[in-house]
Amino acid sequence: MNLPGKIAIIGSGTWATALAKIVMMKNDHLNWFIRKNEVIDEFYKLGHNPSYLSNVKFNLAKISFSSNIERIVKDSDTIIVAVPSPYLKQHMRKLKTSAFKDKFVLSAVKGIIPFDNMVVSEYISYNYKLSMDNIGIISGPCHAEEVALERLSFLTVACKDIEKAETLAEAISSRFLKSATSTDVIGIELSAVLKNIYAVVSGVCMGLQYGDNFQAVLMTACAKEMERFIHGIVPLDRNILEPHYLGDMLVTGYSQFSRNRTLGTMIGKGYSVRTAQLEMAMVTEGYYATKCIKEMNDRFKIEIPIVDVAYDILYNNVSPRIGVKKLIEYLI
Image (cartoon, rainbow, N blue to C red; front, top):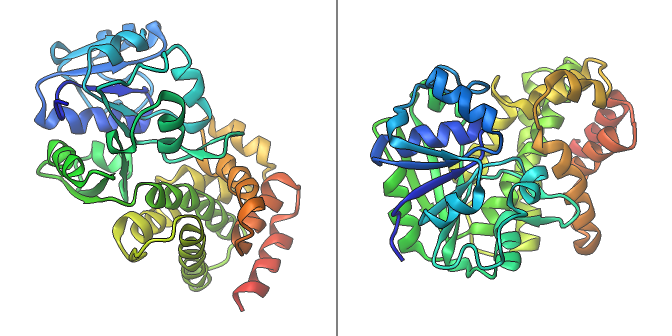
């Protein structure tokens, strides 16, 4: 296997665009799958993504665009998947089971597959018969908007095969991006799923005008719950204080760029869940993740009261104020 070899990006959103910028910092060429031909046409006219991170300019001579996912995958060695989890199946449905043979798949999807309730690495391994040694993930703390601004950022590349993780971490490192490695693939994926849920709850509390003091206690409780849940699913000697666990959770819970926090803030201010989603017009992984984690936990029975409150607010039409009051009793 040639790593990183020819690199492909699957997706055209904010994070996919930021990752394309990252890849182009150290690689001479990029294969880029964008589902809609009209978006590709606009890309060629403007020199940047017409919908996301328009301040990031690209040398289009070094990019091969295509709306044919089979062609992009076939012509690439490392495939970085960066589409919202609810749409992953839709994007990949044309791929044959053997499509990723002799390829390395790197998931940048910070979500869980709805209805299947599987993290992306498990989904790809199971459905495409790919060894976990040839699947990796990219995790934060890292907002696409700050990558676009070339602010110092940190990523973690995780893979069961640590040498492959190190090779890929080196391939995406640059003067403003530092990369670490890990072998805790599923644990980090689960933490990336949970942190979006916690960001929604944090936003709800902000919308209800709870202050920084309360947010600090809430985030501490979220970290404890995250550790308890991840360890219950994947027992492993891990340090929850590492950036790809706690750091990613904190930036998602506090940052102005966090769409999950924004969704929660709108709900806390009185928007219905549906109205907030329509007004944002962007996918918020935390909404889908809440239902998936809740259903997953029906089997494991781990104590996750913060996720339970998020589920009540998002799916059971429980008043945000009542939901948070219930949460306060747990925090005390």
